[in-house]
Image 1 (tube, rainbow, N blue to C red):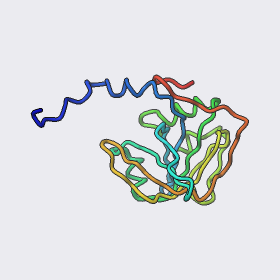
Image 2: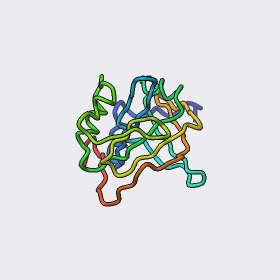
Image 3: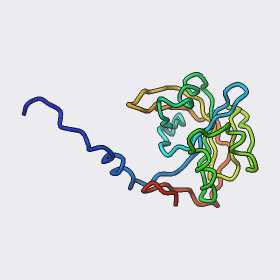
Image 4: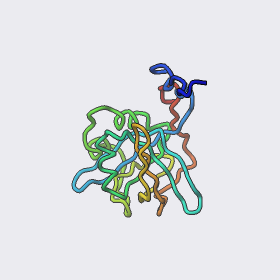
Length: 166
């Protein structure tokens, strides 16, 4: 043993390896003064039941990460299978304000977060950041959930696997 770390995965190999891991799809939104931002995320998870905590991962170099660095309240809508187009809009590079992305979609502002919440998802949570953790090229945002805005158990979830929505 020479004491050197083994070489990392080849370019794209890590991404390819994880592409087969099926994940739910959510839209994270945050109000920043007079503007509304949002992004599609697939790295979202529950962390704790007591207290209720969740974590979301966003690209550290993104404007959304910058805003989440100064705004503690935000919302997450867990998307339903019928919201594939909405996921695509919130994932597009150079996307406009979340207000424009939700135009024509039923939505409202979360009473605690002030963030926009799409109404046809599986569930929506209002969140308050309790910790920000730099993690490589991403920022993990850990948040308590002071309120569940709604839950719809009659819908099927939007799933992403192998770089496609199912």
